[in-house]
Length: 152
View 1 (tube, rainbow, N blue to C red):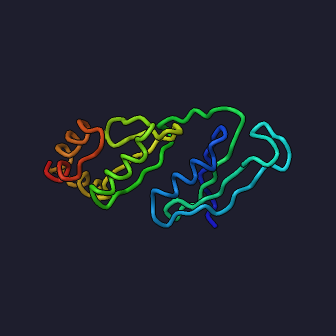
View 2 (spheres, rainbow, N blue to C red; view 1 turned 180 degrees about the vertical axis):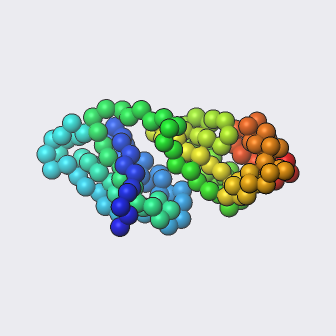
């Protein structure tokens, strides 16, 4: 068991969000759904209180609270993608009902911020000769384009 795991707050959509997230990445699953035994500020007796799930091998918890959360980009989830097809697939899924942002950032329909990036990006940025060109190209992108970053 991981010592630290993210807890995401939702206003009634914890199970829906967890099921959506686990549908996106391999090694993901719903581990447990805990229902309210009594009426709580997060919902009536019988409603979903907490969902524990695994996302790409990382444990998470989703919780229904009484208010709509306000997420910011100060904390986000970065997904390292093996190829452009994976970037495109995740971008399309997370962008449905969400908001695209600059430099590979996207906020999903629940307001949770994500970074969808090619796993080669650290290598490209560690090359002192290429890094300025790669960074310049990256700054002009919304969804990241692996071929354009590699060509920079």
